[in-house]
Amino acid sequence: MEDLSLHILDIVENSINAGARNVVIIVREDRAKDQMEIEITDDGKGMSAEVIGKATNPFYTTRTTRRIGLGLGLFDEAARMANGRMDIRSSPESGTTIAATFQLTNIDLKPLGDMAATLVTLIAGNPEVNFAYRHERDGETLLVDTKDLRARLQGVSMNSPDILAFIRTYIAELSDTLSKPARR
Ligand SMILES: Nc1ncnc2c1ncn2[C@@H]1O[C@H](COP(=O)(O)OP(=O)(O)O)[C@@H](O)[C@H]1O
Ligand SMILES: [Mg+2]
Image (tube, rainbow, N blue to C red; front, side, top):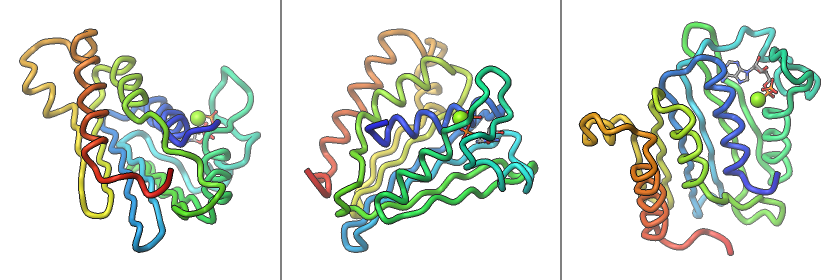
């Protein structure tokens, strides 16, 4: 997987499979600290300590469709490659947070990629789930919250083509107004 946005899509699919109704995605770039943090928090069914212990093992999955689980293991590897780490904070009561750090100037840091496409894919496939996306770069913030959007849409379906096109443009334009990415 080349882009972190595709890892994020995969990690959020876990949240959906866990029955989450609210998912918060945070990307935080801090050039002074030479660090990027990616955090995905859900209110799904959470993991027991036993599942957490096995979750980054590529041969562990509770899914029954494909007998291999790779999402968390590959995200963990992407973080390590960029001199960072991935942590799982989860319990059956509180849901799950997957938190990863990356060194911004690391040569092996994967590009963030197309977060607008990731968001649009998630929203189109899961119109009943609330997604909040927050991207901070050196103190500037881009925020998209489907709960707010839905309130303003007044009954228009969240996954109608017009609305999805609007969301895609909105995220892409706002991303441009954040100051230049730390690299490239
Ligand atoms: N957000 C989550 N909530 C609850 N359980 C999770 C979550 N993310 C991962 N898991 C558990 O960890 C396992 C491994 O996840 P992953 O590495 O993405 O592989 P896969 O999704 O293919 O099973 C899942 O099968 C599931 O049991
Ligand atoms: Mg998965």
